[in-house]
Image 1 (tube, rainbow, N blue to C red):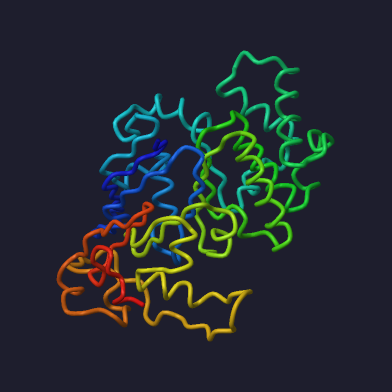
Image 2 (image 1 turned 180 degrees about the vertical axis):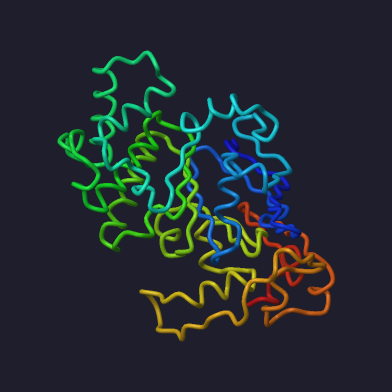
Length: 326
């Protein structure tokens, strides 16, 4: 059963006289207790999609259309007050460098208690402290952190506090937007292990926004590949990252070193992202694709569905015959 359904989602930023199409016709289902990684290079629309789900984009310059259905409720059709009841309680987010959002003049316990009382205003001091300490134990933090200030914590400890904050109401969907990017590799690995353990214990559904394919391959069940605001390929990690069908996914993987198998030459993708304020007739990746044909420049590709929830948007792919990309 899908906990989150995004249907033909578009996000347009209006900047001066330009309209920047940051997300274009994205459709994506996230099942209960799924862990899905949204990958792509900078500017591909990953974070914009996450903020559109939470309805946290600035109304004056951003317009979101389509359907974003969470547990049967279209988040684009409900009021701000109704959204506030859902945010953090049902859908929570851990931002990149979110530890910088902690107040430097208040103790950790006070800050977490203050946030807990937003949805639980009648909670006693004892109940609040018990919940905070319970969360500390979930993310492997000592009880003494309750009485410490942010400057007394390491980067890894502060990120654990941020994760604990996101879990304070035991949400059903956790969005992690580059949440471990600023950490060293060892600390990153420890925190990702904690997250996977919490998923099992709390029955969490996780959406991870990242440019690091290796993180997705080791911690997520599914993956969605975005480029220039479009969803190009999605499916199970074991399928997409093992035998990618879309030329962009293939290029993305060829730019990452592998720790197993033969040593292959790393290859980048020539060119840069297209101007998202300019209308594109064909495939958004056509200008950089070595396999592009005439049709790729004039007609937008349809999404081809394969078994095991594997979807690819490419003119070179048709039905079960994928030999053209091998």
